[in-house]
Image (cartoon, rainbow, N blue to C red):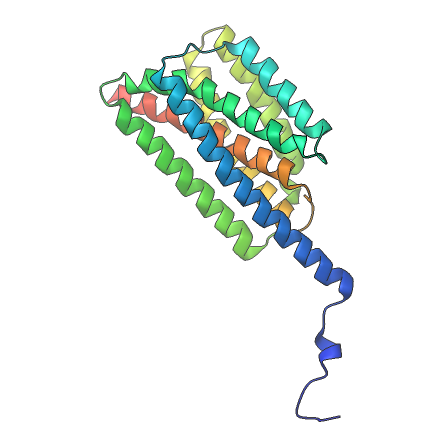
Length: 228
């Protein structure tokens, strides 16, 4: 054999490793494609909801709709119907966001607050996603902490709503900014390391992270601007 050229058999990846890499790349590609489409769809739903001044469905109907659709997506995760349910879920979340956006736009500097929240959300998501994709670090150790933290923050947010405690609501918003940032790192790492192989579930996790990150930043920025 020619000694000037390496034996390609010695450097070739095992067949299983090649399939794993291709599968991971496919999940990443499909996830970000579906995520982009759902973000646009949710933005349209938000715009229509705000333009028509539709009323907010209320906390109970919102929770029933959200968790019901989430359950359906997980139940049908291997079916084409799961993709349709993802659009129903993200459209529903966009609809619930419309009245909130309308309320902020009614403030003297509401448009600026909304744009600041959108810009900050985009910067955080792109920055954290790029970091996870380029470094390929394993953030799986964050899973347990994030699950407990999100549950505690969710229960605290319900308490803040039902007992009308503004200070607690702001604290929860700040906690959600950190938790959703951690979830973006965790989920992106999970995808690129082969832990998440279903792009539908990956899309839902990232969409919910972005949605909660945006609404939390919106509340914090709204409070900061109102205090000026």
